[in-house]
Length: 162
Image (cartoon, rainbow, N blue to C red; front, side, top):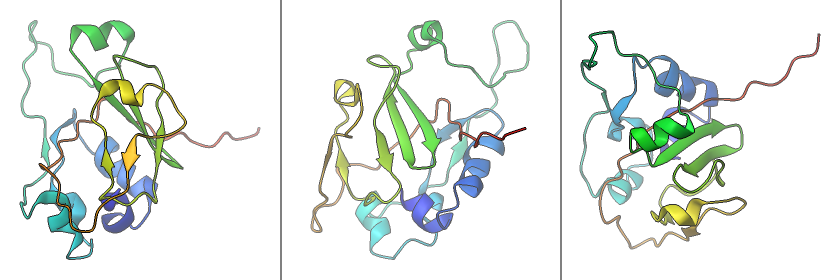
C-alpha cells in the first residue's frame, strides 16, 4: 500500500512494471526501497526502523538443467510447491488469495492505511468481501517486518471493442 501510494504515486502501471514485468523470475523479498517517498514517520512504523533492499530470486538450477521459467499457478502446483498466498494487482486494490482455502480472495483497497494490521491466518482470507483488518494504532509498531512473496500478479486490462 505504501509503495503504491508514495513511491509509485498511485500509478498502478508503473508499479506493475517494476514488480511484475521487469523481474526475471520473481521476488525473494520486497524491501524498504519500495517505501521511497513515504512520509518519514511511516517507514519506521512499518519496518521497526530496519532497512533492507528488495531482492529478486537468485540463480535457480532446475533438476533437468533447463533454464528456469516463470511459473503458472495451477491447483496441482499449489500443493506440489507448498504455495500459500497469491496476490493480484487490481485497479481497486490487491486481491489476497489464501491458496490453500480459496480460489478468490478479498480485495484490499489502495487507500487502505499501510499501518493496518491484517490477520495472517489463511482461513480469514477465504472469501470476499471484507479483508480481516483492524484499524492501525498510532502508537503501535509492527511485530516484525513483513515478507511479501508475489506468486502470480496480473493487472487486468480494460476490454477493448472492435
